Image 1: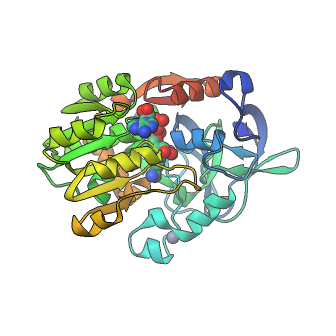
Image 2: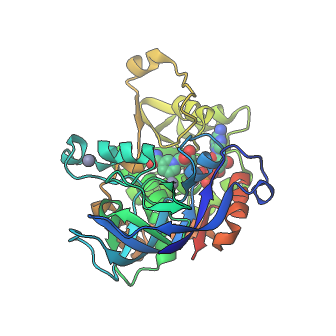
Length: 374
Ligand SMILES: NC(=O)c1ccc[n+]([C@@H]2O[C@H](COP(=O)([O-])OP(=O)(O)OC[C@H]3O[C@@H](n4cnc5c(N)ncnc54)[C@H](O)[C@@H]3O)[C@@H](O)[C@H]2O)c1
Ligand SMILES: [Zn+2]
Ligand SMILES: [Zn+2]
């Protein structure tokens, strides 16, 4: 069948993207789902900084690639052997497919699935193939999803079923921002009630972490960003304090506010200076969690002895160390109970044709989550 999708041909084109047009909307051939795969009609797809990092070259990927990885939709066709999904099911896409049987999957850590990571690196689906092509040449899939499109063929292991009553535009956010941000707090940090926390980087992922820290019962949440608008928004969402990371005294301000450092600091910006700040503002005995994805060549510099003499912990968190089939339905239910108001992060909707403009807005820090409604 034919599908309309946004294809990246060249990384690193200059902004504004409304002029350089890195994403080209075009018609592609979409092959039918193979064994264990399904055809999804995309309903909504969020713009995440991880897509932007492929566009600007900070996260190099094989090109040409059909971008988009935070999405929700409706199943239109199932391939041979698919037993967990049926036509008409509503689904959220998950950006690491989990095979279910590698060592990491077997130990309950599907975010680290090895065949999933290999397929994502190669731009294929979990089964190794590509279902997108143009004039006979294959197009790479982004993280097994490629959701800036009318339709996508994905592995059934890239999906979580959700209730048909749940709004699909809001549901899209759960696939990346919410799983990642909330999971960093509840899974990676296991933040206990009454703890102090700071979140550095207040985009869709960081503000999801902020909401997760509130849900977990943090007594203090210091929101940190370079943008005063993001700080004001974080205060509206319930941050107890805000600090501009650009202030020369930012570290000192956070230390003063927290009585010497926070017990849990979360780096959600994707920048090494943000991670270094998050580490420096963590208290003795505290934990620094990072979800940001800087360029693979960037190195981190921290005071080595502090890890030992202050018994500090530094942890990475990919998709919030989630088990998406368990965590995502829980977060949806908490949203419906009003305990996780992630719809507040959905500040903009747009049409697929405006995807380049949407990335200009994300890059300039305007709004939080921008979701393409198909
Ligand atoms: N670990 C994962 O599984 C995972 C999943 C999704 C996204 N990510 C990554 O998380 C990061 C955030 O994604 P997002 O979509 O929320 O991005 P975003 O662009 O919406 O937000 C990033 C925020 O960080 C702020 N920032 C930048 N530099 C800063 C600094 N030095 N100090 C303080 N704040 C700073 C920006 O002003 C912005 O508000 C990206 O690196 C993205 O690739 C990781
Ligand atoms: Zn993402
Ligand atoms: Zn696996």
